[in-house]
Image 1 (cartoon, one colour):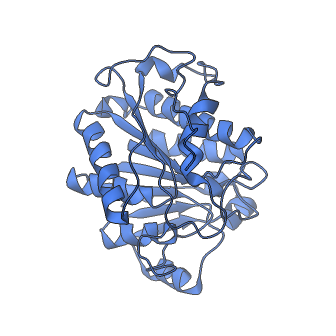
Image 2 (cartoon, helix red, strand yellow):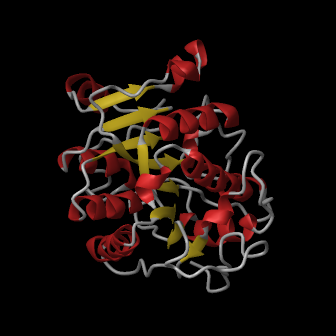
Length: 296
């Protein structure tokens, strides 16, 4: 990771920095990169997204989510062993949740979500995980480690979470079989979205009322986010993703959100900005949801 990265507060160009107690949304920076298997650079994503956020309009087209308060934490130290870094991530997420606030985490590779899941378990939350992703991420191990970004949802299953996958279009035969056999796994794959539309998305009645959303940016088509380590053609477009997030936030109590696997490309600004806008739009969806009072 470069020593020249800067970490301005999210939207600091437009808002005064609230205290941690005043802010509904807490930006958590997790520049973790230990198991990337193709393109690299996810550890610079938190800095790039924060800098891109300075270009956002406060008004998101419907409301001004920033009025609920956005507090940006210093970057988490992600050095050392996998379990040590993930424990620091979990501790930060737990601190935010104990305050009754909503953690919005910027990765880093997808493994950072394991830290958030540990926090959910420690906090006693019976939450479902809603995963936007090009890949199933259900491998038991990959390249010799169970902490790989390709294993994050397998670890969620091991921990007892229910999972809803949206946009998957790349998986192994073993992952395919696991999804067919596992009743805690639900999915709407990219091929179905392409043929039948995002309106086909439903959340099963059995799915927990409280959810955590993890958004691997390779869920988007590479024409929207080319800056990711493992791009897959045939992904979601912007409005499909927004429609899905609106449906989720209107039907479930969202207690946390992360965006992962952005691998910024120097000089190419639009992927960084797109992720900043994704995060801000999600803050808007949550703050306008009928469930918002449950979080704050």
